[in-house]
Image (cartoon, rainbow, N blue to C red; front, top):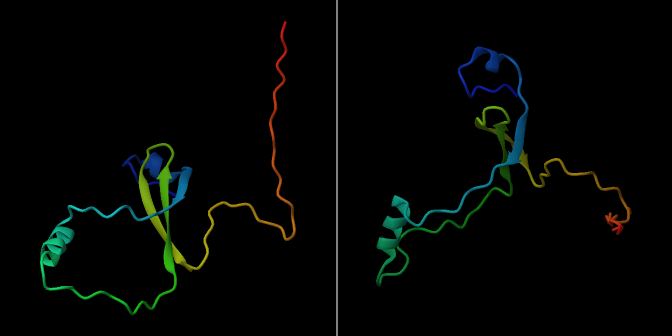
Length: 111
């Protein structure tokens, strides 16, 4: 991936390594303007004041990768296609393979 984080031409021309993670939505703030307005409108008697969406049509979400340049820490997002299951850099599981646990034991020698 080409990094466009800085204006340095040498930095833009060559491809730098990026740290890749999957984007995840952050926790919704209680103090955002829309949430404050909604909470104020809901207060008191009168029941539900705004419509609640029930007719969900999509079964998947688009996967978004978050790329961070290892040299300049510039962050960008790369949307991928829709998929039901997404695994980032996971090992392929073979059918019928037993689980392997590696134990590391150290021997203490006294002198």
